[in-house]
Image (tube, rainbow, N blue to C red; front, side, top):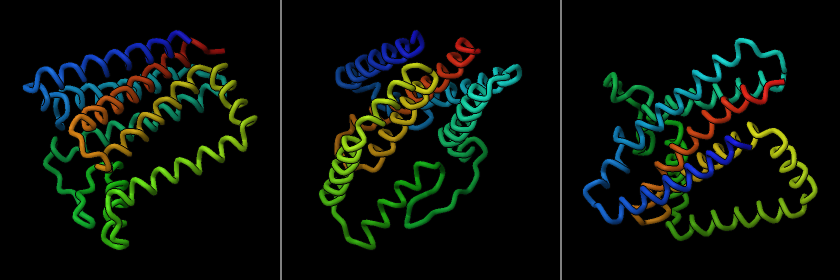
Length: 217
């Protein structure tokens, strides 16, 4: 659980420190929230590091569980790295397609595309979309409560094998970042939270690769 503790401590610290910096030092806002600046560059490097680590540790794996875990880490990290650099759009000046006015330069843009389609086709307001999101969360919570024993069993399994827990935390961070990216919340500080969630997701994947190597059978 050492790597899980490291993740939780670093995540808490970067949220607190960056939020304080964002609020007290407005001059640093762009460096914290804009594309191709500090946090996004760190995220890209961490995703790339997780991908490389997973490939390195795959070489001498014999356990099927470890091999599958490292493959998941490698694939997700590579996809997220590509997403962070916009599939090389700004690096190589590549043209990117547009749908419904949304430039598709990352996987998260498909969520934005879905949002805009709902807006244009169903004429949903932001408040309506928030209500739909809240209703979906309520339905999910009810389903989880109905299958409480299975949820508890899954949590126990995650605790027994820390890499699974770190990967789950990474997926949750990515999902939270995508939800924020939908612009349902009209507060600029949420853009900071989105970038931090992506950075912490990358950190979790890198730590999960290290954790697999330490927990090897």
